[in-house]
Image 1 (tube, one colour):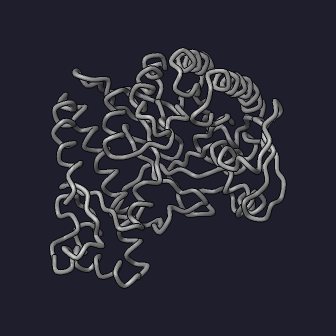
Image 2 (cartoon, helix red, strand yellow):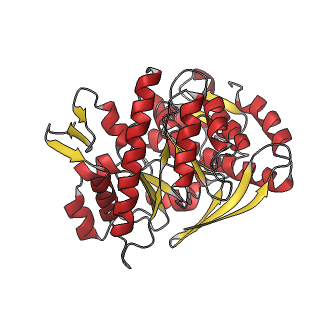
Image 3 (cartoon, helix red, strand yellow):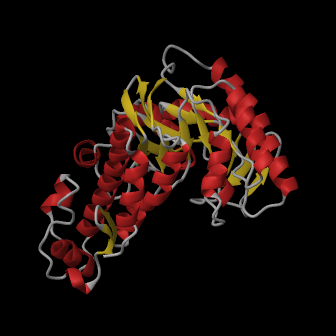
Length: 374
């Protein structure tokens, strides 16, 4: 993997670049649709390619390991072949999903032992095992196993958790390097910054991650409802190297994307566009709307005529309103495709304005529109 930083906005830290992988280029800033179990929920691959125009998607190590399992993925030739997606894939280490199983897991220096949410069977992820699993999945960008620090937590716990993540980092990198072959040399490993909401810990973690010398870096543990997302992200981006891509994990709303792009983040993922879409909430170039509301019952205008994309410009609000009211599955699919089209459009618009040197002015203007409810 190679990252070329092409432009920096003169009035912010927003960046435009290109990540080049063996499976194609990724133009940053970029939003990555979440394909947890080898599928972006309710979205088929042709829509990802043609309508949404995604350049990279995300898979989840925990879920793919449990189902369909490594035997099937290896027999298929990896996740790309299995799901028919031939552009880049990023996989997380499964740390967040294991963290969410608080009543079913046990953390030790060696790794984490947990019970499957599917059948209760017991499994263990170590930093080395997490690398091996992602080797089998075949993702282009893979993550080192980390502990996703709970929130809220004490300073002492955050410090201890960060130390564990850093020790796992060294083991993960050592194993990644030791298992590199001609077959899997397309893969790139990202370490993850932790440290909760504590400035000195976040800075220490960012310095440790930067010193690891990997081709890109991730920022984890920021999805907590304390209003410090931008502050924590700024602490970290001030330290992480400018010549390498920065990936903010699990973020977020359109406002979060734009504000964190301004801070210097390059890559994002979040389930929000598809999850909200399945519940009838649409992001549009004119603001957000609830397509279930009666006001759209006789609105025969396109879902979003300014957005582009087949779904957004072909189908009407009235038709989508009908699908949701009739509980037709097509409604969930169309809303998900539309929202992802919006997120990729927003990323591309941000990039255009960074290159033009007008990002900050555009961001302030577009945020006023996007935060409107229509």
